Length: 374
Image 1: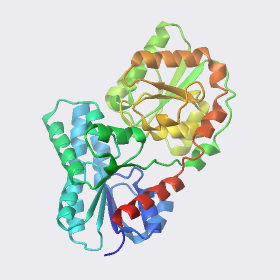
Image 2: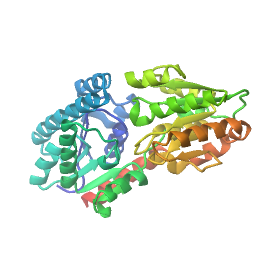
Image 3: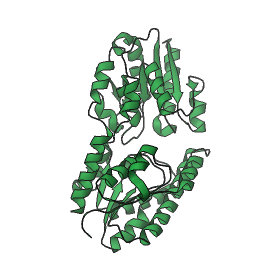
Image 4: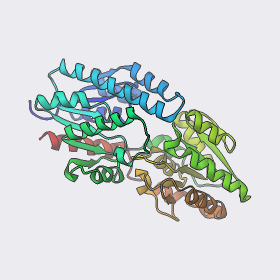
């Protein structure tokens, strides 16, 4: 078999419908097996190679609502593991592919099968290496990390979303030549449509966007807001996203919780804000950062957010040490004290993401896959 014929797998979706559409356009896609439906415009590009197994996506959504962080993580990774076994069965029944490209936590069984048949394994690392992630003392999660290490060992190449995420794998001992950066794109039309200069008046308006809690720093924001109140600094906080129960409890005394909102509504909320908060404990990219900048709003992000590379302090945001609530509170207080400066940052914010789009992602991912297969 000449050239790349890719079996692409993810129990959710993330950015992988973009990957599938790019590979299809390049004549490299054999099958796209996933849990969340592809966006309609991308499904049309992917065509009949698109196989959606929605039960896995539904299972992940239900796992996200379980009480207790360890329980949620453990349940989600069991779903990833079972999807991977299903993916291997599907792959074993097909002989028309030579590259397995699978999201982390679902790749082990298919990678082992593909290694025996002489194929190429590409691990699509949606997150940073597990050694950089927040630890959980749980035997099931220790077993998860062993599976992750086995996936890494079987992977010929690893695709990461940012230079920061790539470094996490190199620091863990993975050879640098096996780890590649494939920066993600941005739904520019949605967020640029609402972009504009900031003509707000009054106290600073913060916005926090997340679909989890602890990992994205919800507890840090709650503590920083309490600190702002003690110091008598006027501000407001809106929160968008399907938060975990503990994150809702942390934030409810300090914020207006809007729940999950659509992309257009989120873009409007960003325009209504002055500063977007993203003190994530680990985030290999961080779409929220790029989306906020495209809307013309500065961001306070942690130094373990991949998209923090887009931020220039004093021009379009702040980069703070991960997990440092004092640094977060200081940055928020600085924004409040210099609100007129903050509201003049919109042009610099938009300029920072001028080259961040899905066309660049598609070109990068197809070029890399083609080179690897050759």
